[in-house]
Image (cartoon, rainbow, N blue to C red; front, top):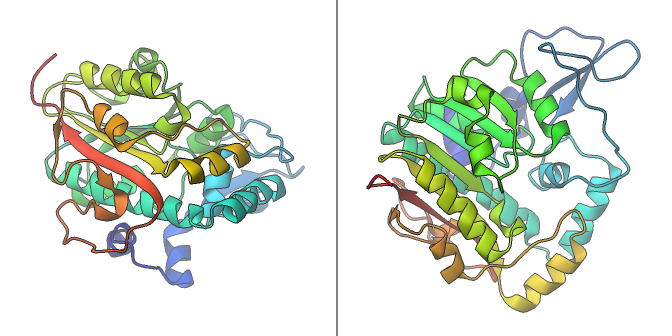
Length: 314
């Protein structure tokens, strides 16, 4: 299975039978198993989501699109509904490369997490993680660091409730509520601090979330996390980017949340005071970490990303 995760991170397409091998959670016996972004959500005799891990799964409105489920659809997941698929397809009509961008951003995350874990970092805080899917941070990190600990953070109570039920049997992994606009509150969460030792190096991941904040707010969010972690820690950031005309069409059609199109200079500024890992802030297609360069054709729109290390305290 570890080989499958390596191939996904490298951008290789995975056969359907192998995708099921990664997605299926073993050892679960229930009345009805419903795939949740490639995992299993249990339902009881009445068809309602069952309580797990001591917490009930939050009810949700399937008639309204949800950001996490739209992304799940673009990534090839199964935890999405008609309203999510309608919005996702609407976005593809406006911007056909959107799904490809989402997949390439996820593949970048695999390479970036592998890079950081190979430097001995065993703690990860994935902010705005969304729904669990086939290429999760703890799966990637544990390929290199079997004892890696991961805290998933999201501001959607439905996502957190489902993630908690799915991760209940995964030691060293936790899902906690939190808004990226309040890093201090996230880092003070008792559940997070019970797992993540902030006196030791940690990797903070802001993948595909800072375009939901204006440039000044996004810069402050990244800076607050960077100040809070110790030397030797890392920050992984990826942000949707593209030319202004495409961006305006995309943001007007995307009704699940407001999106800001940041310039590459603005994105570079999100890493202020940190030491960028070569090749710096580039398209996710061009960030290969320890792996050979991908040499892919450029897109008019893509995710722009970087990985940086905190060298000095403060």
